[in-house]
Image 1 (cartoon, rainbow, N blue to C red):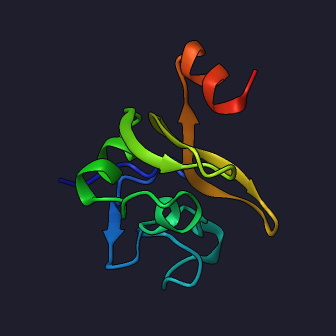
Image 2: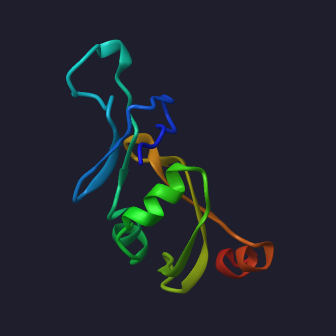
Length: 116
């Protein structure tokens, strides 16, 4: 199944590797440099920052298609475990914006996790 890139809209598909999912027009690929795209989603993002699971191909495909995924057993900065939904979006990092999983909380869960 060929997926449409959420960033550039290309219907040329998404490449799947051991470490990431990226647009066929990702920077550095052969072709017209004016058609370069910066969409890349790393599998280990949730594991690296929140002790969560490696992003599966099934969940990545759901995210790319605009669906929410269930995220369970993530660990926040204070060491507390939490569950939430995830959606694809641009996230801020120390190196600038990049594509990643954004958390979506039900209001009651948001208060518990954020201590509001």
